[in-house]
Image 1 (cartoon, rainbow, N blue to C red):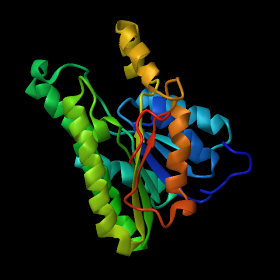
Image 2: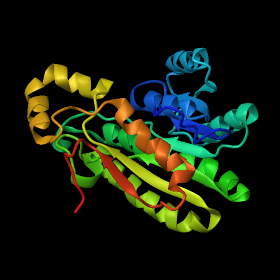
Image 3: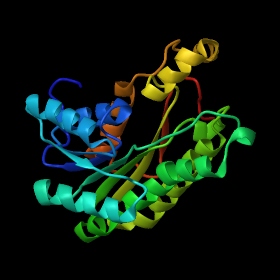
Length: 256
């Protein structure tokens, strides 16, 4: 974090899939900028470790278990965070999951899981926070999509469809909620070194080598590379930005 930045002091943020990887980096950055953060994840024990690390650093965090595929679960998570910290000002939809395989080899069970976590999870969490934001007259929603949703990705057909859906959904929400001063924006990671990608690196190193050749910056993204963009959209610096999509991909994809 840039020294001295505290754009989110007094704000309350709920971040899904925040126990590790990109979500942990986002939670850390928002907390460093002054937010009280809800570390929501289906892996409650890992979320507790992350929250503990933040609290040890003098930051404000609370771990909670959340299965984003459940609307009731999302509503309960919002209520839990609000009891401890106050109304949720910022929602970051980060939870995601994928299974890399050609579409013709995939099964309906896999489709359902990918859709439930990556797309329906965003719907559930937005549904849980928007009424409160509307009542208070403001809020920030930042959803993590993917460059797979902008340009496609081999072996990720259904995942790419979900991530494209997040973009279109967010643009529509941005139009519907602008009158309530609720900003809705999207951050699209390119290839980022997470547990999922590390598994691919171990099994298919040549795929990663080819990927790196296509990235102008010649390196994979790191979770913290995404955190700054999310912090910007979550802050007052982005009060006039809504319905926007930004790729953090080392130049792998560039909008025309």
